[in-house]
Image (cartoon, rainbow, N blue to C red; front, top):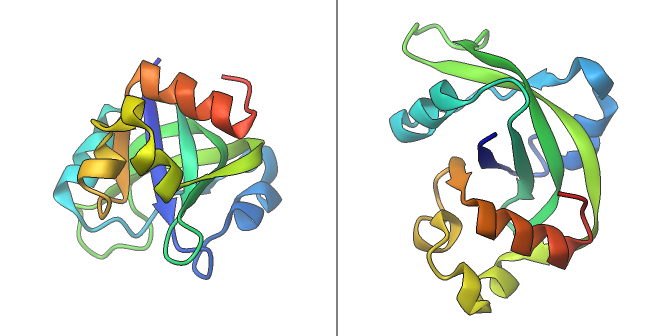
Length: 139
């Protein structure tokens, strides 16, 4: 099982919005970056990812699960753009901020630290465990 991080501006799509969709989940649409799209093409049903609030909050706030593999983005007029569907799994007991991630030497190689603008990105197994521990999440 691969691990991922999905970034969203809370004013556009928040953790609460994701949770409200229940087991039906929602398309992770609107991604218009080839690298992020290609990461979604690598995802499999059952993969898990961190849900990350960007902008002001800048923190990991929960775990989501991929429930549908890459397919055309229903909101795009261009067939190049694809997305996956995800559902909320577990809220963080304590959000883990970007500042905390950046100052933890164990996370210095994390994509979020090196390329914080990428909206969908891989997370290593070690990074996953560290952030789960910090957030009080069950891996």
